[in-house]
Length: 148
Image (cartoon, rainbow, N blue to C red; front, side):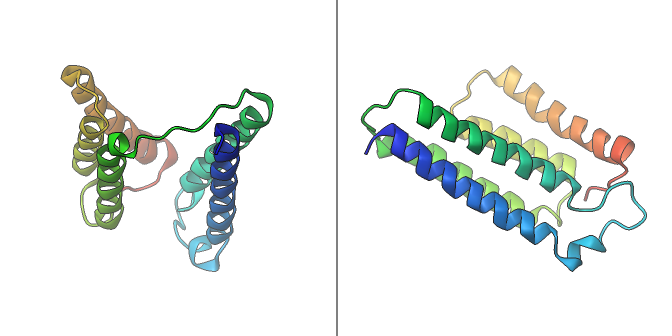
């Protein structure tokens, strides 16, 4: 399989996922959440879905215009980072509403960075602390959305 075909398949799957999840955000259940706040509960997820859809379109454009090569995957090289990230993200998603946002996000960010191989610990620690704090302040203060 060529990288072009792999990119097209991957981007198409991402676009379908974006469409399905966007349609889910139109459900009546989500329209009633967040009443009394500046934005409802689907505001931020829709932003993420839009960004993911744009990245998928960019990947399709790159696949159609850019060069193609034979796809070579060394699955053993990617098994731990991808599998570990998947397990951590699943756990974070399952416990997101039960744990306070800032400590959970700091631990999650640091753990994913380590699993993905980032070894500059001072930068990793600073990023793992600054990003959740920044997001917390953005949502609580600017957008008026309460986080767990």
